[in-house]
Figure (cartoon, rainbow, N blue to C red):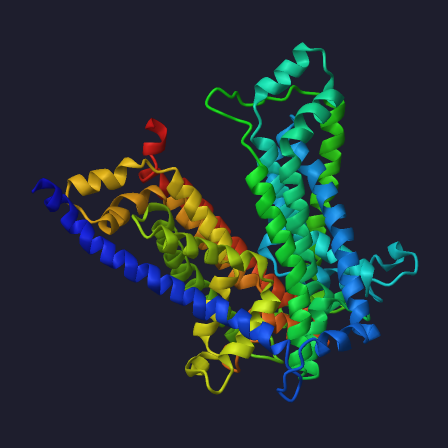
Length: 559
């Protein structure tokens, strides 16, 4: 009798859980699986809609210009990946393994590029090293429009992501290993090669994979500053928008999807191989001061931070200069956006970012709760988790093109969503879904497993317990997911460049269109408006983290 009484509320929970699992899988089917299937199908048909099989691939391989862009993409990917990872490795080492002054400040400065669209560094580089740039002589006669500009722009954009990955790995170190090395009379060089490198080898390889994927799939930098140096991302845009050749655009998207998918699989393998080097007996590592080492790394980090600030500062300065380089008087006229309805585009971006943060966070946390804390239906829960991991391997440009092929079909009843804000929100949430999902899963894993058992004994629904207990306890992670979605929705270009309509123009797209029309100063102004908005949102998030969260996180201090 007691058993039946305790199971009664959870029998209703099981029905609700099955319904939510089915709805979540249906959402992924409509917003991810079917669009990607459509793009793969389109790649097998010609321009007249006839089945072509591998003929499109044969045409691609026989077209020198298209094949050239594939070579360029891989070359840029490898080159930028090693440059960024090398620079970020030293930077992360300085802020985690030394007593260098200002480590916290340098960590904050390294994250600044995340708040800007990838178009911003490209525009800044034009003002710095373009034909009329103030530092054009630094290039010794070379042009910024091409490989040099792409390398510099993508390095700026990818640098903070590499620093985050590497500094997290270096921060999770057992100080006893260094103490043992010191006792065995091992110097700093030996400690570096026998403790530091082995401890972060998988994180280092994972960083290489992540940066490579980001670089080869970015659209903004090569579009603005690539000049006559084609890459796969710009080829997709030209084939679809310029030539209306959807079959070839789908094929190039498939080619762009393959290296990203391989990098994703390799990163997953590395994560499974990676073992924690800390346990309950581990001691934090406190590096000893070293005047020469700390001084040299302080100079290095200062140069890197100065370069990052210079790129952002150049865009800010260009946005308030009357007419570069002939009239350098200051003005706010460029923020009027006379040629386009820029403030409407900015309002649309705020609406997109707000709706993405709200609905995306709710959806991500609920699905993560179903996966991690659900009871039974293990097959469905594993399927949902697998579907949630797919977006990490899908470039934004490919996802946007897939939405064209799927949602713009006349025979698709969901066609009415095309060009509207709803589809922009869905695509943005889906594009950045995986990171939020993993963040929520990690937070839920930290909760005591007894919560659900106590809820059962009190005859309380699991979902009511989730709202009253699990959600408040996971509030830091929930806010992290929300700010992550908000900032990325403000800055994204590739995922939405094919999907906006006349009434849903976004600020990031306005930057692209202004630059295309030669209005670089208003483009810089719009890019800075995005940056300032993302910065304010991040500051509000920090304030909430240090204020409101104290009321809900005291349990962490007592467990």
